[in-house]
Length: 463
Image (cartoon, rainbow, N blue to C red; front, side, top):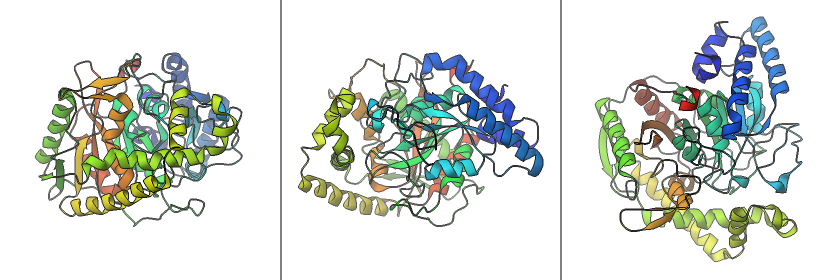
């Protein structure tokens, strides 16, 4: 096995045991990027020289006083919304061409303090306003979408071009590409990971979180990045919780949705996810049927919040440089100008009702288990999907539909791979819990992963 194939946990153990140097690991990952980037397009910026210098510093520090953290010397990618001092933050947009960050975002600063090695900035759907990331190809099938908007981060991790990466999630933008590329993606509880220094799409829905090979890897990254930041007005400390607590699933109640989450999904996705849920029962969990509250309002509330907030954020550049936006993003931003204050306030009221209803749902269960997305990666030229009930749905609407509730309610949501369709494309299962129970979804994910063959597997491009 080559170093770029190691998960974060495996690489960290090898570095700590002095079996692998950070320089060897960084060189392996950078060589891997050179080998596959032309086919994948995961990165906007590759900082090879800076990464090698940081890896050399990490090697000297570890040799002298030991590792600062499990992330010390580990190569990572940052979504190109996340500021890193001295590096471009373009949001994959001509609007931000030439923009260079003057200081680190809080997330980048915390990862740097932990000793992680930044290898580059990964592509996003422009300003995170989309679910496909058109600049980037799926790691399993280059003719298919990577998912978005954190598509570059997911593909970098899935292909061995980063040991872990950071993304953002406003309506599924970590979980969608993670599911479509067969990696783990975590959207933490709202406010748990600070967003200061991160370009916003919709401030009341935005989350920052990791994309990794394994659930344990995600816990390591969350541990390094969570915590209060006075620069972020939505930042919270959250109750102390052991993200690495051992345990089984005995006594744990897993909610299985009767509605919404298995509506309009492919048979292969449904079969894989239901099989994974049954595996949780075999591992000791109790399955409980639940009704998803206010399901018919989910997409209306998501768009009712996101569209006007995004337009407000882009108001000045939309007026001064509208032609620099990609057409799909510009249309959405212009649509936001037509949203009334009354519509926005009604969406906020509905969100408050939905949060309360979901809290009551979680009184009966510990975790909700469901598909992450209703279908696997669409063809890059596919604009819509036709469902067996006769309805037609835009690909982006399809991908956001099952992820949006966790953004509206702010609950933690973890996606992990649970199978493949007949074409060999990955399928993801989503685990959600009440706010600040991030440790619970991570524990359930770890237990499932430990009982599964092939966890942490790279995309076939690595073969």
